[in-house]
Length: 285
Length: 251
Image (cartoon, rainbow over all chains, first blue to last red; front, side, top):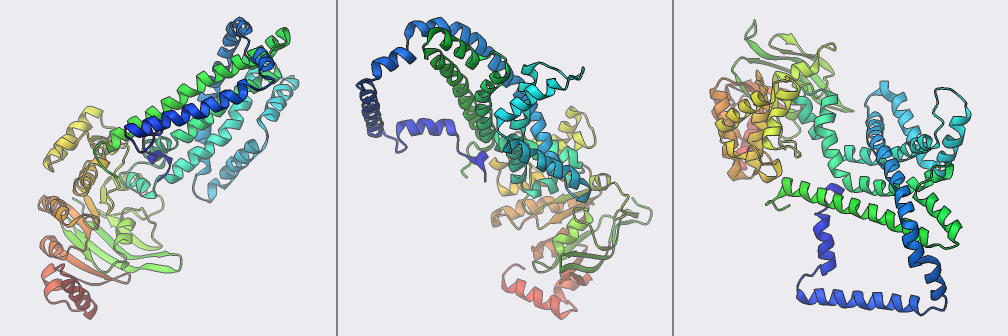
């Protein structure tokens, strides 16, 4: 089976940390080898001739605390972009995936359009889509077309990421065995209801890990929206860097992104673990 | 009860998969409350025949009449037809993301639009009847094969079908689990359910069937009451098939 059957990853990470063999001695060996490795890297970095300069330029404590509040405030915009885009991506991509799976010759044009869409938006670099939409769409000067760069930045992210996420969904849908469809249809469920109640719920459960992978990519790409104007965390740190001639604000921004993505990863592990427990507890497979 | 008292009629059914003609003109006439057992070697067309009756496969030629209504016409609403026909598969095909109760109530709720409370009450009554009441909150993966297959039967029964199709429902089970499923089917037969059963369980077929049909290479080669088919088969092919079954110790 596919990714969905991956044994509870949360617990496996713990097992990884402990050393998969288990037992007291392997914990100590893991701890010792980690300390040796970290110590080695720290030694090489801290004794390098350029370290004092790098430390001053990237890890300046005063500048860190000075610039953090402003950058953190700007980071709220990244989170907003991410949340808004994600909702539309999850819905739009599912629609694309379903359209692409429509059977029969009648739907050939729709399937074709879905294929062209995914090919196109996976092929063009995200940054170009943002530029083209962000500068091109408002330039049309149509009264009903929004001119906000933030709006077009989000649209660009939705278009690009939906192409990827649609493929993830499609893989999930195709991994559900056809006998499930036969069982649902034989009970009198229509094609749409079969998708909604039987196929899609199973497909989505199986693709949660790769979906999260795309989520994490998206949180980072929210920084690209800065290129057409909006001041989010990355743009704010650029401003601070220019003002202080010091790179510490970049480290602030990096830290904020990490603080966002790590809980996302743990949340998914937890969700998968819970789902597995509910379905498989007690049974060995 | 239909006007002519016939539950299911097949007329000259043909079905091919590519070059391979699986059904080569099958006729069948099943009366109300009758139990028809289809026997025959693997690949003789038993499963395909059942799937055709449930419109999971479209036939190439012929007609199928359910309660006198032709269901193989192009303008027939397949979803409506399927509501009246329950099918149980060899591999159970339960929905793994739903509890037993969820599996059983899905179609009554989403197809017949029954209120949740009502659908659940009926489902629980059915589960109780088949000794599964304590399993209602379990997920399919936690049940034994025999329990899963009984849930699949209950799921089909929850739509109150007029006809049940059973497609080798015990073939995937460990031998010690076969009996519990067969006893459920026996109970259905005693309750007057019209059934079309594809099976390899010959002694069961002999016991329960009103008519036994021997399928061979896409045709019904011989049909008759179980005693005739099993004790004095007319066709040499039927004899040969039954002898092999006896040798395998399954009769």
